[in-house]
Image 1 (cartoon, rainbow, N blue to C red):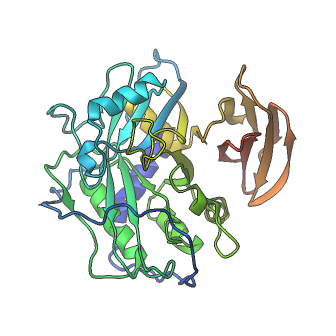
Image 2 (spheres, rainbow, N blue to C red; image 1 turned 180 degrees about the horizontal axis):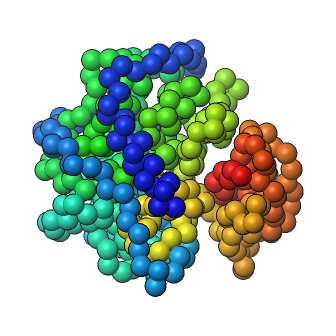
Length: 387
């Protein structure tokens, strides 16, 4: 785990060193039906800090703390985001009351502290029980006319989460690439900002919003150090599913994995609203990850970097990991409903079926992953395993 986490940090650090982005094939413009758009960029009032000496690798934790399954969300907003009215303390209470072990606070273009605290240099802004709050930011840029082109609206959404940041700049950040129309250049600016903030992990958020992602672009982002991608965002499930003209997030993910690249699939709620009003936009819940790690911020980040987790929109698992050359998946005891599993081997569905427990040998070449679907449509995504 430690070696993988160190490699991830090294890859992220390498992002800022790339001056010229390789060409990325364009995708044709397609029609779509879109949900209400998020607010456009607000004026930014501060610039990026000087880069920290290095993005810290998640440190080893004492063996006395056992690894357990920890439920968390890697994409959470509170009042400092500007498009949420919920105070941070109330957001924390919402997740703690529902059994979450950790969240990443990812306000728009801002690293938020809690109650005026100073946690500079740390990868979390709160480490007490019952909830760990990882430090984070959603680097948000909403231009028009990006290339490759998305849908006919020409709207473009470059949204990147950075988890475990160690810098604590005041106010909002100015980081965006505003001269180039190439999406890869805009994402590169986010990766450079992530390095300057001392971030541990980069997550690509709702990539298919306004059909803004291609397989070639997502693969290039993986090469440049993006280890996490939202294959399921509770607010953007229609976009993630794809349509007759656009690939689903599962198809895009498989296209990246087929190239031997490392990228882990995340589910999130992208929460902004917490009052339970059915008319609220961006409600909390609906997507999360369950990480096998010690209950420590750096251990959680290391487990995310190593793919030691599963993603879920409602399915709860007892096992979702490689054991003895096999990928083992089992529904948690007492969980209601009927379940089916699909094994995806090197991009193709090869087997599966109904049940509550499954196992399959990891192929000698390529990868194996799985999707579990409950009879109400809720799912979990088991991370790819390689021999």
